[in-house]
Length: 225
Image (tube, rainbow, N blue to C red; front, side, top):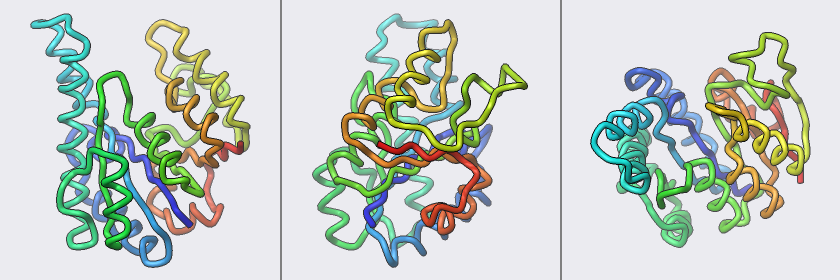
């Protein structure tokens, strides 16, 4: 299979780098790469949001603040590159065509953010579409897609299987609310729908066993075209 992994920054670096988890996930990715072609996109998470919020004191330029976030995602990506050692391409990849070239060298390309206005979820969905990946695995700090925000609603119901159309609808509803923060943003959901990308949305605990996850053994949400 050809698989794109989208790993949230808040999973790798919740308050500070989670070295133990980074080592675990690097081991899992290395083992998976022995039998499958894989690429990884890493997010900025809490640290990126803190830098962006701090920058608001100095500038209202949203594109400038997006660039700050992109730099943070690439710093997080470098941590994963270090953990993957010789298995990873030694530089953060910023272009989908370069990612494809790296995969031909039997190395794992690691990406962060690429362009202002695009979240790393959107980057991962576009990369999966470009590579014609068989599977996109999104690792977040929420263990799947819910019918409402489980961090705010204790009665929120996890959805085990949904369509790409339902994912877009849920993402749009989340973003229409002030301060909404869905598991997958609306732009990424639309790219997943457009590319007809089979997608898994899982939490940190499932990510400790990615080898089982790609075989369908997980407690997250399956998104089917």
